[in-house]
Amino acid sequence: MSGYKPVAIPSYPKLGEKITQDTLYWRRYKTPVQIKEFGAVTKVDFSPTQPINYAVTSSTRIHIYGQYSQEPIKTFSRFKDTAYCGTYREDGRLLAAGCENSVVQLFDINGKAALRQYSGHSKAVHVVDFMSDKYRIVSGSDDYSSKIWDIPNGTEISSYQEHTDYVRCGCASKLSDDLFVTGSYDHTVKVFDTRTETSVMSMDHEHPVESVLLFPSEGLLVSAGGRYVKVWDMLKGGQLLVSLRNHHKTVTTLSLSSSGQRLLSGSLDRHVKIYSTMNYKVVHSFDYAASILTLALAPDDDMIVVGMTNGVLNIKHRKPEERKLNELPARKHPRYRVFVRGKDYMPKQDDVVISKPVKKRIRKYDRLLRGFQVSAALDAVLETNVRNGTPEVTVAVMNEIHRRGTLNNALAGRDEKQLTSILTFLIKNVVDPRFSTILINVAEQVIDIYSSVINQSSVIDKLFLRLQDTLEKEINYQEELLEVLGMMDTLFATMTSKKETISGGTKSLIPGQKTSTAITSSS
Image (cartoon, rainbow, N blue to C red):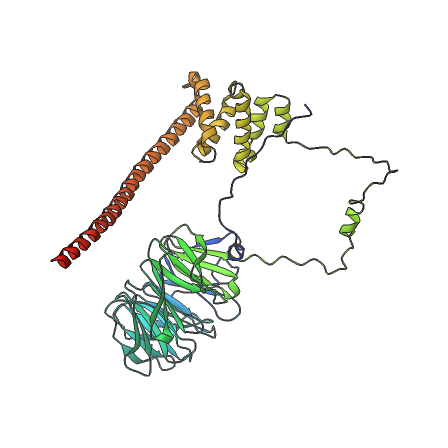
């Protein structure tokens, strides 16, 4: 008994997501709060000033929510039809919005009725933003036009008619009083200067443009449309810098983190992708329950608010940083050398050495195997936390029992609950390449032992059918892989034979040339 060797657990490479600093940063959000709106949420915009409120545009209303409120603290409902693009001014005191009835409305945050109404478009206005001078508004409409409005006088200053389809997105420059960008369903992104009568730059996105975004330095412009997110270099005349295709459906919204080092994109495929602006690789992603129409980040990334097609507003708050321990003088602990003193001492000739026996602790399943209790050892490794957390331990014990020739005895005599555990484990892991060799043998013995009790328990019958279905699918996969392997072998063989033919033809051609040269010289 003293010579018992514990079961050797093979180690496998760990599979799963690589934990990075971005993963840790973007996972530090609480469980989301969900608020049901009256219709699809088409725009979320955060106030640039304290307090951190945000405007949610949905149906014929614009709701203002506080940072932690689940009920609107203010509502603007003076719209005759669907409202669009509720946007704050830079000082957080005014809010502008478009409408399906082609009117642009301006609201005071502390009031209810509209301060101004700007009429001039002939179709729905989907794009509204404030110019950086705070006294003008830019709007884009389904009538293919973009207009500049004077806030105090309520008059139209200029109009641009260069797009040939709906203007559905746009943004104004924060550094220049005269620049703004529009994106249209005619696949183009255009940059306008209010001091000129035509656009100063145009980029072809090649898909209907759903969102545009300027970097803080405004040297780069990002456009989203179709499945693509494209980054343009404004300093090189709108040259395409990079094209990203990481979504499966149309990309509808873009946002930047507070540092400007991470770009976020939301899509109808229910995913939010986060890119590094250094190499434009995806560093993290979020999944949502419905297609995403709009996305906004609070200052310092304290909140992520996502609006979806089903009218649900999803709000995630960042977890507060862990509080530091009281800055009391730290208790002095013994130094490391205190614990290792005398460890390297070499006994002298007259010393009496008294060795302290070291008690080895063994696992529960090893203790049971040492006592030849194979059935109990199998039960120990089929416990939920073991079979789900460390399936390699369960498989290693099964292999050890099989090596001893007692696997049949360990599997026999099981009740419905115990047999359910075994079959569930087999269904989950029998097709895993790491365990399939051992578990197929276990599955065969289970079928041989319990084939006589089929039709006595509906639970067991369903599990056997699931096991059969799992194995049949795996066999079909293997057959398809073998077919593909045969095709590849044929292709490789064909390529090899062509190379041999070419090389052989070249060799035969060279002697012929020499012969003809010799005949010519002799004549």
